[in-house]
Length: 386
Image (cartoon, rainbow, N blue to C red; front, top):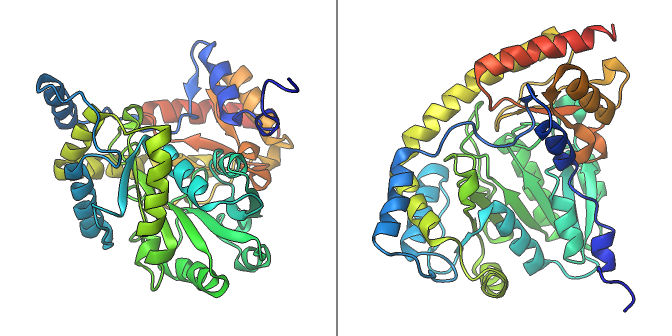
């Protein structure tokens, strides 16, 4: 036996986020701005629907693609909220979180040697999932001076004959940046020009604060080129339920379903019944969360700028991505010292890609009181560098 662990897995770096979660977990009095999940509890109606499914004995497998009732509700929801139509019988799969949907999509389209362009800063799992599928993640840094928007010249220059797809996430994790329809159309022109696919991670779509969210599938000629990934974790405060979905061209969805059948069988039956209720009656819950996040964003971002941590105004999600360059510290040094000296946990920006160096991700999905306390501690910490 040469190696017990596969070489490509040995080369894989652990998630940079987990290190700071682990450090914070062993300290008392920490204010965590690191967790990327809503601070709301799943609505009671959704929990009741799950409990009712258990009482009714709905504990067996569902169809591999998910309950037809749920896929139908997803189809209706996407048409009503985002003006895009998908056939529930052939174009939608219910997955174990949006993370599994992303994994399935990448494995279904990537051959060894294929390149997938990732706009960075980006969620930590994108590049590793591409590499695990035998592909190459080509990282293109966003324009930090312009609020981490896409630099289209750099994007086009990164496209080669090996490029298979572009992976987008807007509103973005970690920056909160949301692209306009005109900017997305610029991306679509490149997709058309070079005959590419798009992996569109729209998990934060409902949490868009400034302007109307545009689903990439709705752009001219893009529906057949787009694999749309979303789920229930962020918009319906259902992170622990691990429920997502993918919608896309029938041939690609069929390929994904084959992998899903062997790797996972189906998503949790009880969670699927809860998701049906969320889609039918959960819109008001989304609006309540969205209103609260917008209020917190306005306070937190303004306060970061006031204490000397320059931060662009994020258009969605629940993250702020302030610059820490004025302190002279690296992202890692800033995050570690802030945690040890002031007990505030943030995530160093470099874990989201090289273009995130000099920044930190702060989640404002915490109570206003906690955010106010965190700002006081951060201000005290930053003063020593002036």
